[in-house]
Length: 203
Image 1 (cartoon, one colour):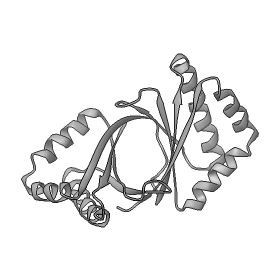
Image 2 (cartoon, rainbow, N blue to C red):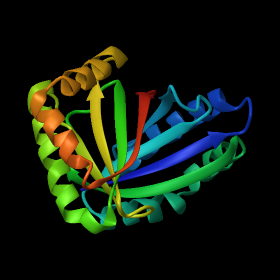
Image 3 (cartoon, helix red, strand yellow):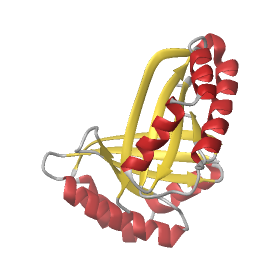
């Protein structure tokens, strides 16, 4: 399975219009093409940012979807309107190597970077970590490896009904002895960089 994300930074003062038109556009595309895309905004990060994400069974499915909507005359006007609100756009494709649980209202993405000299060992360790935190939190943690962009990144994804629930998950891991041992072991395989993003789904 694959996931695509489009990071959109609207022009100053155009966030609400971008959210409204983007949500409408995604709703039409999901209905017409059977896709399952969603829009979300960052919390605790850049408040003037919109994300559009979607999951795909294969890259062929994603390619067919792109080719279909790009030639859809009904959507052309909406695309042009949406583009008039946007300042910057960046796309990324990732491979889902461990599927997250059911999508809920909020998400947290923990992004780290595996040392290129220890990539396979680091990947094996992070899979064990995902299995363990899924067990103790009761929520399946997803893992995404980039197809485009930095090939040594790894993204850890969790969904929850509230921000507090997401934070409680982290607090639970942090006090678990097995997790602490795994985290300490990870210093051999991972670089000293760790980025966390929280998001709220708006459609």
